[in-house]
Length: 406
Image 1 (tube, rainbow, N blue to C red):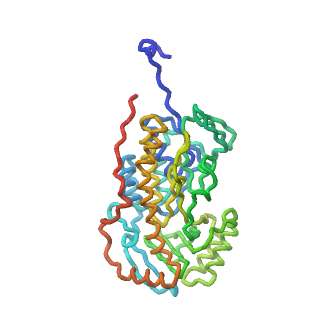
Image 2 (image 1 turned 60 degrees about the vertical axis):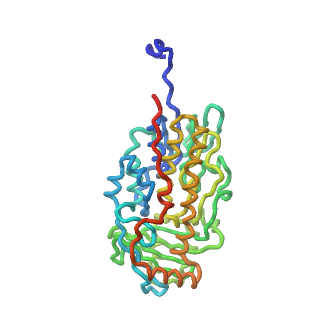
């Protein structure tokens, strides 16, 4: 107790401690705001460093206000990709339609952002790294809740106790598994699998996406710059191929078999797939949970509600959800805070998860009739939408949370 404490009869209150598992998007945003509200924050990340590069992601609607309040909106506007054209092709490679991407995505020109994933994670890390402890190349091994906190052992051998723990470790969250049970209890499979990787830009594409479709299959080349393209192969699959998930070679073999007779540039994509060192393969699905917290532990981002890329809202939901979770805890009572977090955020999450039907129907028709109907609709699209009628992206009015008294 300090001399001033003796005079006043008070003791300086220690800062509550919080551990966040995951340093992608939701994790650093949550860390930023928890630190603002008086928490001492540690972020643990199993990767050895921030993951640079990566495919482009969207920041839309309410999420734009989150990054503005964090002070990184100008930096992200400078990094904006400005995708200018989205071209759909028939199975024989002939053109169906060439449109502005907003005609399909429902974006708003001049407002919504599309940036490389690495540019966003770099910007988030830059504004929080001096105030938050980051531990890379480590992860949570076990956790045990008690009345005084959460006892955590790390794979690297350390042991620490935190007041609160947060899982921001993605769709296949280990934190969720330890607290709530196996992923299959919450994974809602949407009927597709995909592989994404980079390859040489041999077609001279720039700031555009070209997508080839046949029933149940899609191949796309996404050109951000001039040298490389993001290659994307998506296919309908009745059941998730569980045997392939832990086996990179099995993943490549499955994709090659599905697309073996495909035309257009697909043979070259398959050749590049065999040698690519950055292949990401997964099922397309959502995480749906009846609750996002258990005791002193809460989930955020894809760990809690992965909406799938078919909605285009994964990143935006991570930004908004992390902001809402931290703000709900500004008062210090975690039980009340977790309840407020779910009450204020769940409808917004559900509304955006429900966008999945529109995304699948547009991008990946599974029957010849559905593909023909999709192409007919695309040929009629011409104008860029005004932004009206896209309530899901902006349905939540972002509150201002009060900073706690010091």
